[in-house]
Image 1 (cartoon, rainbow, N blue to C red):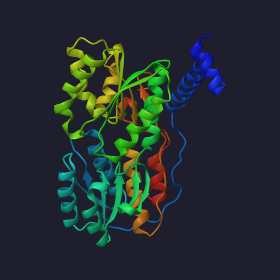
Image 2: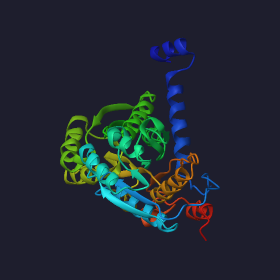
Image 3: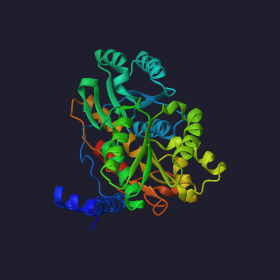
Length: 361
């Protein structure tokens, strides 16, 4: 036994390699859980009767991002089932343009506004909207899911970024057998991104054989301008083997061409994303396209949930409190749970449950 291990045993009663093995085993168990199918319905089993003719405005954070765009598409679909209308306004990817878009939404005098934008950066118009009894529902609008009365948000819908970020780290730890060298990329103009990336970093730091090489904060709206230079810099400074995690898959649309053109073998740089964009699914379907995993959001389910939360608010009921567990999509399970359509569709019959709750046949 080496002196280092002897010291570790004396200090903590457990060899450092044993603690490291425990972290790796825990990570592998978590990954095995999160790649499984999600057939159990954990959401609400009842709802108040929807009132007719409600008008909703959806502030899309950035219509160029799949997830942001598709929330609007699916909210319109869900709303149409109960005779409501959803109008989409493009927030164009920055807090300044979100502000203008939100004021435009208020001018339409809707019953509710859904926001795929950071609620903390929109407090002035949110207060104005609430003064007019306009209900605010968030999608990725705060650090964690749940009600945020202090922000004027009835309920914020999203996967729990603490679990998502931790799962990203666990995948890297498991895949590398506890030896991952990782760059953590984030977009901290979104509180959810900061929460998610912090969870990734924190989990990686518990792995004694892993290294967080850099915690990089770069604006999401500038990914097309910045990712090529950032990716090149990481390869030059750190070299492979390398893991790159991001709070969103969109970044990798611009990283992959750099890796491919630089002659980097896919197995030497592994990309770990989140959200489950169509381009991420496409990379996972192809294989050997650098991206190895994404923590996919159930966008259609969450869009239906947004309409459900509005319905509860309009009927003076509390929010449902529902949060769908994380789901890891890899090259091995990419054809399951909606993956053949390049989207995460849990096999829990969520549409039927929501429609039944609303009294729609």
